[in-house]
Amino acid sequence: MTSTTTRRKSNTFYVVLIAGAAALGGFLFGFDTAVINGAVGAIATAFNANSVETGLAVSLALLGSAVGAFYAGKIADRYGRVKAMVASSVLFTISAIGSGLPFGIWDFTFWRVVGGIAVGAASVIAPAYIAECSPTHLRGRLGSLQQLAIVIGIFIALLCDYFIAVSAGSAEAPFLFGIAAWRWMFWTEIPPAVLYGMSALMIPESPRYLVAQGREPEAANVLTKILGGDVLAKIEEIRHTVLQEREPSFSDLLSRNGGLLRIVWIGIGLSVLQQFVGINVIFYYSSVLWRAVGFSEQSSLTITVITGAVNIITTLIAIAFVDKFGRKPLLIIGSVGMTLALGTMTYLFGNAPLDAAGNPNLTGSAGTLALIAANLYVFCFGFSWGPVVWVLLGEMFNNKIRAAALSIAAAMQWVANFLVSTTFPPILQYFGLGSAYGLYTIAAATSFFFILFFIKETKGIELEDM
Image 1: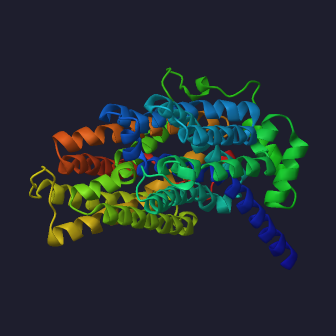
Image 2 (image 1 turned 45 degrees about the horizontal axis):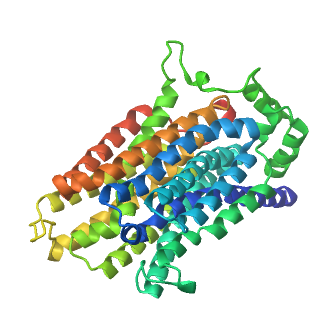
């Protein structure tokens, strides 16, 4: 008994290590999308960019991510999960160097798009790889590592921005070697980008990819390290679901009448709703948001960092419970909580008196209530829709279509993210914060019914049986 337990423990440790290495892609995904938060103002000043150019510099990276996500599945199926990870680490590194060295707003935007492609690729490859290398009883928790890595990446990027800006005096001021602080903000991404590539070279290829390539002895080696014991039956099972005469392609995602398979539509629905509840508005525009409500710049930055910390804590809660309670209950509770919190914010901002500049002025208890509601909203998203959607996307598709279906779902997630991020400033300007939060409240209420009617529980089901 003891030797079996010891073996299982060492197998678990090994699986956590390789899943952690893959999740570094998630860390860079979070870091890359959030690092621009502290630099936006300084870049606009440095290059004398107007609001449209600045907006595009932030949001075009998200369309780059949609492209990266769309093609990552094909690349991962053709060349393997590991090579795809190495390629995205190279793109992260190039983007980080280039973003700190631009001559104007347009070449800066180009480097951000390169980083966006890497983010999109990482958003597809990590969940697929982790789902394919995880024993069934650990798959939910290990799948949540991706979201944990994303939120830690966001948090560390915001901290780096904060410390560089504070040390230099402002993002525009010279920092080390007399180089502007905002350039250093982007260069802080270089070490983790290089580490990601090095880690990817040290982890084994996904056993399901190896079987699909006819490399069964290698797959057996990897599965022995992951599961222990006799793995021949498992290989037979994988071979049964994976091996086709041809490479999986997007045509596999179509039903007989030519439309997308129902399961692919459900994946797209999950992805789009995860963004339509407005979570990234909190992360891309939070310091602007709190200043609009009357907090000082220093307080706004502090609140943003606290929100990032809340996000990490709640993701840890999801990791603890996703394999106990299952995916569906967590999503339902999250939807109810988000609807209530967003509804409260809609009411508060919609009825707040305006100051001379036309911004809502939340004084006294209304300001405190808005702060509590905003963090409650992040809390509810953090234990449900944040991590659980990635877990589901990694495991809800069968082996034959997983990489291709994940690519489409993740690409749609980036398009939705782009739509939410680019529409927020004009909605704020013309209709006010109350209307913006009203739209996100409707999306959160919709997400409740979507889960209720369309999502099946995947807890404890083998990937081969999906």
